[in-house]
Image 1 (cartoon, rainbow, N blue to C red):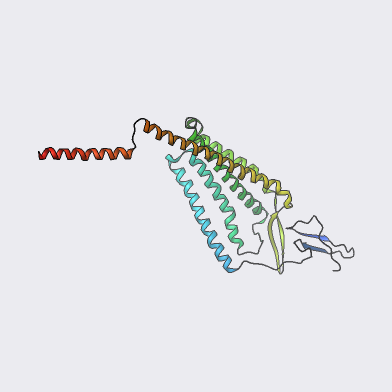
Image 2 (image 1 turned 180 degrees about the horizontal axis):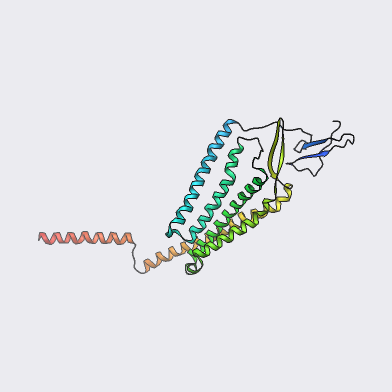
Length: 293
């Protein structure tokens, strides 16, 4: 093939694209992989992780996966089967456990499997690419929302105990959790359409695919920024404020309790026990003296 040109500016940094060269007599297409070096490249050489990397990654991620799965399943089973644990707080913990379970299932096995495949290879097809990415974002976002709802419930229960008897109920907690899951599903649903499967070009290998973005990366900035604000910054600031108020209320109650106890002549249980033991020993001593006389 004679002559070469640089890739056009619309080619993204992670895409393989084919375009017609400037030589009109050459009807062949040239494939480019844009990187720091704007030069044409052919199919890449197959690349695999080293055996040491595979073993270490499999062991550590396997431990995280097993412990996470068993722990979250046990939380759900214990709370659902123990009637005394049917409280609003535990309802949010169950929601959090289910979300964490979903995130582990959608991410960790694929990460372990990737250690034994080609660098960017994806084996689950177009539907698997969309579903796994959707479930990962759904689990992460629901976890953040569940923690936020749990924090609000704790704030009301501690700082407004009278109102908590009406607001913090199991039925209301279940409705809130259902609303959080519906909102997260609707918010994350675009991920079902924002991914795609692309063929991978490797020397000597065919029919290899990868799961990647359907659009250019710059088109996702607004979405990622919304995620950052809604599910990280806002919950973090709200939690800091509410836990600060909780700490202030508990600290104030502690001071009032101590001051009231001293002003009313009340003594602590330790002091009461000490005084009673001293009184008992004194009476025993007096009794012995009477017996001697």
